[in-house]
Image 1 (cartoon, rainbow, N blue to C red):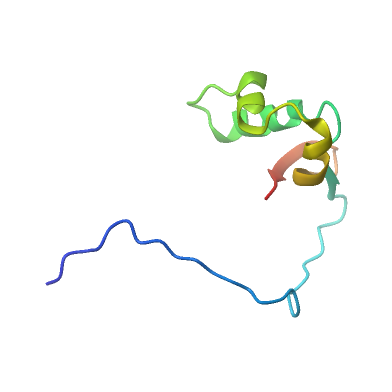
Image 2: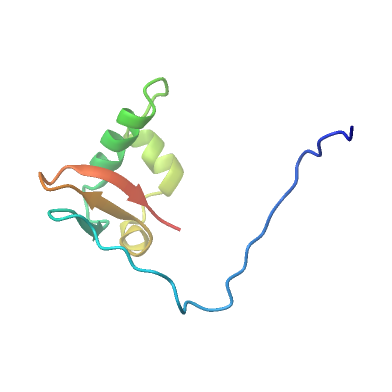
Length: 91
């Protein structure tokens, strides 16, 4: 029996953006790019997901900085039909 290898890194490269499937959002859901004040949405999302870690505006600033112009190009939020932020993504 061989020993399992550790610290294996995998890199995936896509040569182009052709043929990527599109999946529509359910009715009532929408995606919005970061706007001033959306850091509060991030805190709420992460508090719900990480119940045993301290999540606050200081953590947001530590993770993403204070350049809101840059955030408008790099961070988006998913809102449900009640306008509740339910997820966030960015590169």
